Image 1 (cartoon, rainbow, N blue to C red):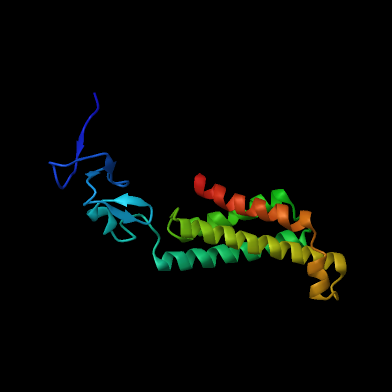
Image 2: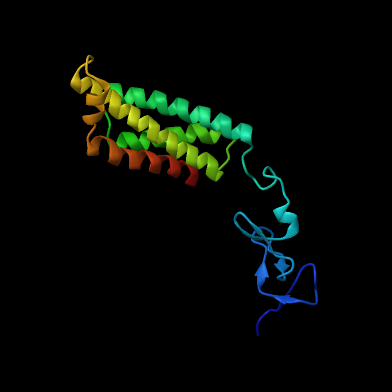
Length: 170
C-alpha cells in the first residue's frame, strides 16, 4: 500500500512531487522551478541570505582573501621552487580556507568557484616564479612561460583546484 500525498495548497489533488527544500507535496499548478529544482512558492521567494547563500559583499570579501592567499602562497612555493601536486593541494586548501572564513563560513557554489579559480592563479604564479629561477632573472617573460612544463603546471593545477574544493567538503 502506497502513501498518497496531496498538495499542500490543494488537499483534493494527489501528487508525487514535493518541494526540494521543505518537502511540501505540490500539485502541477503549485510547482515553482528554482535554480536548484522544484520549490514551493514560499521557498522560491526566500532571499539569498534566507536560502543560506553568500551576499555580494561576502563574495567580494572571499574573493579578496582567496586571491591574497593565492598570490602569497604562489610566491612562496615559486621562490622555494616547490611546484608539484603536494604544493598544489596545500595551496588550494589554504586558498579555500581563506575564502571560507572570509565569506562568513559559506559553502556557496560561488565561493567554491572563486576559490578554485584563485588557487589556479596561485599555482600558475608559483610555476612562473619557479621558471624565472631556471632561466635567470634577466630572462624574458615569454621564454619563462614557455619553460613552464606540463608536470610543473597542469598536475599541480588540478591538485590546487581539488585542494580548494576539499576544504568545502570538511
